[in-house]
Length: 410
Image (cartoon, rainbow, N blue to C red):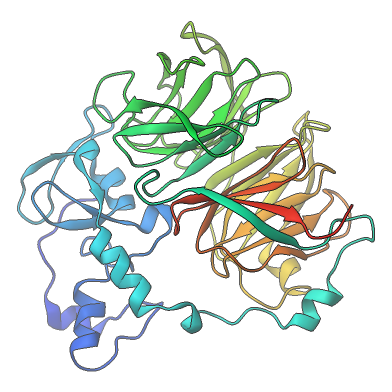
């Protein structure tokens, strides 16, 4: 069901019912927390996470991305501002950067839940064969080159890094040295345009696939960046994307609670088959495919805490990580924003709450929690491994790609 627009709420009523996350401070700071830091439609606290990001409407009012998606008509993607009733299009909205910066100021890293003690991290190290902690080697991109990036994928064998972001050209392609070699997917309403990208994947033949939340569609581009593929049905809110060793594209759908398999000639715009592989998933977002055996990891956000489900290539459930099992080994809360597989087939996640990257061990084996990166990141949103086994992290907070290397030989 679509959310119905409401007028601005009564400030006294809002003060009497503070957000669950943060109790408003007394005085002017408390008024800021209530009046500015909460979406005035759903009354949830704004944040850097994708669905909680504050979005400017053309009229000047601000609502969260989740409400923009819910208010927009599924076909025309138009809606009325819930406050002034001015007609808007979802593609005309943009991140409210001053409010995002205010959130960073009011919630410094020191105020976040403390990371687990160092001795706990040592106790939780994985098997001796695993690499040691990763250290920052270099970064590329940065503000002005990338704007609020949301998804990243690595090209097959050539070191290319493809990033989806909020710029005028929604997709940027970097070479192995971090230089921008191509950008495409202009912001707009046409079929080949990209309205609001969430994730990106690269096929074995170099085509780029983007999940476009603004258009509620999956879109594809040939290796030169020319638009070709547009697939709307059966997708309702496509989110994560990954490519199987055979070249099929796996797509998670947040609203449908499902994982789909898309087989297509991306460059020619020809769809061969779209098939639902799994249903009943809880808010599926990130998805990753293991290059070794085709196993699939799905990151769910349908309830409290971290939940990762891992399936075999035949979609048989191999295991899952849930908040209870994780709490037995790792005392700190996590906010998982991305998932991938390392070269050995272990599941790796990004923890935005602590600016960290953590390995969860081999699917189907006993859960092993091992921090890989514990510093140098602001808000990791995507992960990937290069051919030389470097760990690449897309940092949404720094608007850049960070390259980490193992601090000691494998």
